[in-house]
Length: 352
Image 1 (cartoon, rainbow, N blue to C red):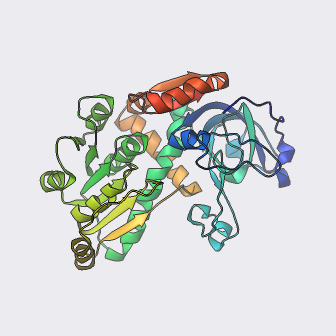
Image 2 (spheres, rainbow, N blue to C red):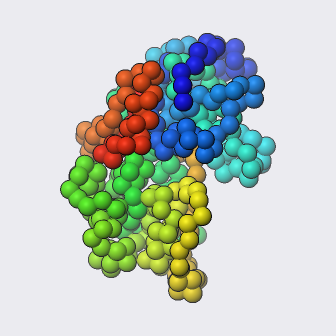
């Protein structure tokens, strides 16, 4: 990672008068940025020998083209989505997060420059407005959109059951995605148990409990015992990055339940799995396991609504998730150290 002088963006970079010029205020960073820096994945856009990283952008509109909706006029706070259309039928109907293409075009991740820069230009179709009441926490919209998509997918699948109404859920992992997933579930009135490795008390466990949810450490009890005490779980969101837990979750999922897998796990980790028991449980219990990645424009819009509701029902909670500010682009090395070495950091973000 390094600093680079890049060309100044302009509205003419987007055709049809739909360009939106955005001044970047904050950019959240996560494990994806750390992995790109380690050259695990991520390619530069065509014609460039570098990739501008940062996919969790938050900014303010500076200028808008003549064919941009009035909701995106100068002064509007905005977040831009991440993935752009490829060639599959899903891409052509605005569901590029469900593309069947093998190559993804993702701002700040692969083949498209991201938001860890002073300004960027984007097509208005991919720019989401936020109310000014979210100025201090709007940078959390992109990570929240991951949980929003997972929950939306679960409810869409379970329309098959006509009267499905989950009462108890488990969230596996208490990082940013797990915490925001717990928030989204609590805003829907669901009892939540958050299952994570570290023993309480610490900030993450406190944040779980402030939402009226239960925190359980995997160092103190197993997921099976947790389910026996707090379940059965109608919905499980897996966000740990530890793939064997997906199969433990499959064992404790309630009948007619949905297990949502949100972790991207690289490597070749192996585990011994009770395949007959899991298979029988899924068949006889009409259970579902679904993977979810990225998010659609609609998921971002749902996230805006939940951020607003969170500020009403749990005032001040979102701000506590923003633990680790980094002052300016020049301190990218400090940003990387926070991502790799600070175990108390929840959300690391750059004040651009």
